[in-house]
Image 1 (tube, rainbow, N blue to C red):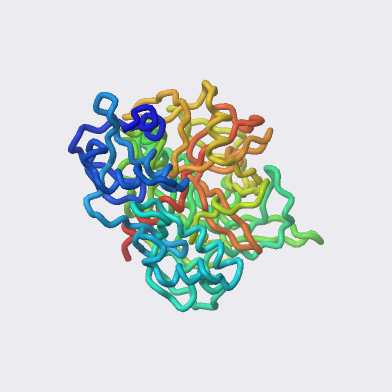
Image 2 (cartoon, one colour):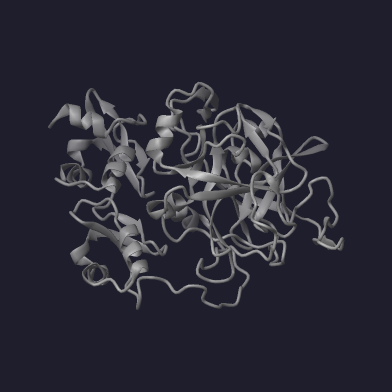
Amino acid sequence: MNIVLILCVFAVSASFASGQTCTLPNNDKGTCKILGECEAVKKIFDKKIKTIQDENFLRDTNCGYEGKTPKVCCPESEKFSCLTPNSKPGECVNIQKCTHLAEIQDDPLNEEEKVFLKNSVCAGPEENSVCCGPEVSSAVPAKNVPVTCEQSAFPPDPDSDCCGLDSSVSDRIIGGTATGINQYPWLVIIEYAKLETSRLLCGGFLISNKYVLTAGHCVKGPILEAGTPKFVRLGEYNTTNEGPDCVSKSGGQPDCNQGILRAPIDEIIPHPDYLKPNNIYGQHDIALIRLRVWAPRTEFIRPICLPKMDYTLSLPANFKFLVAGWGVHYQDFEYRIFETSEVKLHVDVPYITREDCQEKLRNLTDLYILSNGRKVPVNVTVWNGQLCAGGVEGKDSCKGDSGGPLMYEKERKYTAVGMVSYGSSKCGRQDIPAIYTNIYAYLPWIKATLKE
């Protein structure tokens, strides 16, 4: 086996002991073994033509070295589980074994089916592997299916009108400007308590009537020295006022919300691999918060949609995401504020590919993450559980919140594709993007963790 090639393919590694339990990129459990002892991963390595999904899988499954021989996280099952573009469980197989996707390949009905097929490509031991899920009448989900928005702990169907919609008519001029009072109704602020004081240290976003998504660093690690997460503020606009907030509409008439709902936290669930000793690249920076009360559906409190596919695979050139929040941040082992605003702000940030992002951040000296409970400088390795955006002077995720959403917007419907994770200690610098947790990569963990 070509050692130089192996070291190149497995260039980034997190060190596990042989036989130690590990987690594969698709969130399946596995055991750390020498590559030659893992037939399933070796088949991917030996493929004559590797897709970018194969290469990313090989890189992210690396769990260390034994001398110069790479070790990989070897799946417990011979089957490779995956998630289809419409968020259904599937198996990664050769496309000819998946009748409905093979039919699309032979005769796609429209552009949406072509995109669906492209997003179905997965890392698997067979050539031309796709994520084959349950057959449906049409592989491409119907758009905007009218449904009744029932109260549930589980996220709404992203193709329904029960998520990702706000009733704002505010202008779309974005650059760190104030939002409409009813814009982004899924944004929340987490309230922390210590002794007799409370502080607003992180953000998050509502994904159902019971659950909020936020960053792992917002609920675990050194931030707990500043306070314990106790409440989630829903329906917030102006943080200095707990009563109804009002802004002036054209003509001078007031436009008011209903005041905040301080929902007590029932349970905090960080990703099980966040802050593990081998986590040296800021990985798994994601957590769920379960609310003790049901979040109502109002004009000012609504969930955002979770992604049904990896939108980064088919973005047009110069595509811009949206970030919104109050600018509350926790970074560099101490609580820091970057231009904190009393009212909700929003900003657009350009998407940066992982390759370009890593190149831009390669020589940065003021990037830090938490590893094994300590602040350590990081030579950036952006893995498939992360994505990048930003790098425009004065426009950055510091206009949003730690744990807040990176949003994809199409036809006034919003999807949370990322979550504010970490970046440079100097916010809003030219050509220095921020790093976000890739929500799509964590859908299996999210769905497996939720309970009614």
